[in-house]
Image (cartoon, helix red, strand yellow):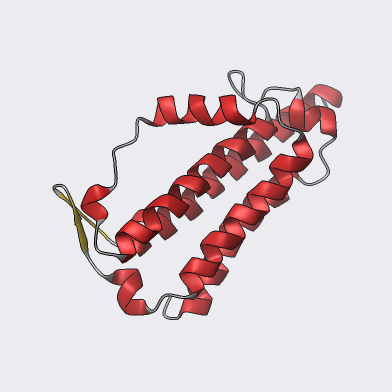
Length: 163
């Protein structure tokens, strides 16, 4: 990816993969049938919102060369806390917010240049860039969940029509 528009397109691709994976699901399928453990599709989307919100918190720190101030996150605890916040919110709010947080991230990234995207920052013993710590991880995370949802849907289809 050599240009900011290409990076934006890559981020849009990741989110589109996720949103396309849920297209056509009923409200019941989105909110009541677990895809794994006790997570529904709505919970997966809430989980993504939580990480989007975290990215919105850390991007300014990285941009200000303060990556060493990014606090460590226990993913399991973070996910539990995020799901607790979103569990009782309506699906419509989740669907709106997953688009809003993503748009905010895209707006920030669109305002950067390649120097900022690939500038190295120290975070403890780790060296990070916005590309490596935000962009690449974000897209792969969304694609991973999209694939899990697609596989879950195939299982649903087989349960309905076991041919």
